[in-house]
Length: 481
Image (tube, rainbow, N blue to C red):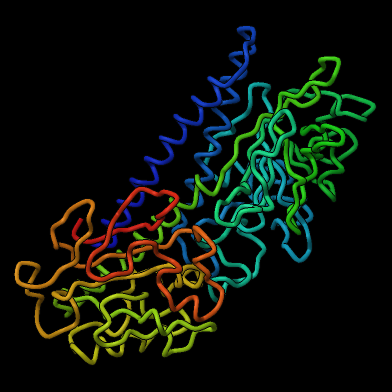
């Protein structure tokens, strides 16, 4: 019952995000257009709506991962469609989009996998399907499985987009090298409306978007090996180039590179259009706050289910002391500890039983493990986030005999804003990205200092929920709301 309520809240939040993103994205694109004739205005409107819809769908996909079996993570984005069948990774030569070791960023550029995203066959104003590129750090397949935050294959608040984007004048507006690690600038994903065919700079003919010279199925899927042998699946027949500046058909991100994408319209010295590709981006700022909220809500749901499970009289477990964190994790470094009211969540999927030993010893009525509906023990996703998630329990709701006395007669938490009242049973705090060099997170000593993760939310029992700024980016959720 509690799990359903939290899931409904998450779905409602995700729907609101999609609606807001769609409206804002479409409006921004539409009103940023240059003066055009009426038919061109209608084409631009269609393109703007398609790009905004695609962006909203990708953000919704990344934030609503609901099957945590295996290596699935909040934030996973689908691989592009390489054979024009509408499916992620759908291709003859590969079903994934490469890996960093293989430097296969070419596989991370293809058409938008609209079927995988649950979209209709959306197209731009010229009738073309959209194209899409995804950062190596956020692709779903293939990648190294995260075993501990900070290691290869992890996706959490410290994970940055790696794609560079230029404006129509050739200026870098999103730097995939992230020269300032405290202000993420690389793009997580790019969505591209290719526009009508034109002659790429240096090409002998106008872009060919047919099946001629290759093999296509009856419904237009490219069956050639490689897919690019069929003109309609060759990215150079859709995306454009400014010689010596940027080629949208060829981007490099491993190792960090500024070879990315340029947004049209771009004209040559004679006034001819040489880039008509229209771009929208998914930035760190677009996606990461939503992922942090998703992780916070999953954690709070686990705690609420724990407190109301079976014979538990409504109490929460002790926390795992921040001072115990080491890498790689050991049983003692993730166990709860008696009289610890603030720390990290006890237990990881590596140790599914026994990690609530101190809690159970205090009150035999309290469960010995996270309840079945809790997602933390499922798959490996929690390994990505366990260093970034902190937890506080009120003194009145700590492990003990019998039902809690309640905040009226016991010490409870304060979260101000929104309120100065000491009325909260439990709070979950998720750390955002590092805001300065004074928040190192590399060594065991770094990880044992909560100030390296949280700006103002590591002093029990008083916490704060503030808008993200240059001085605080903690995500805070609590119960009761």
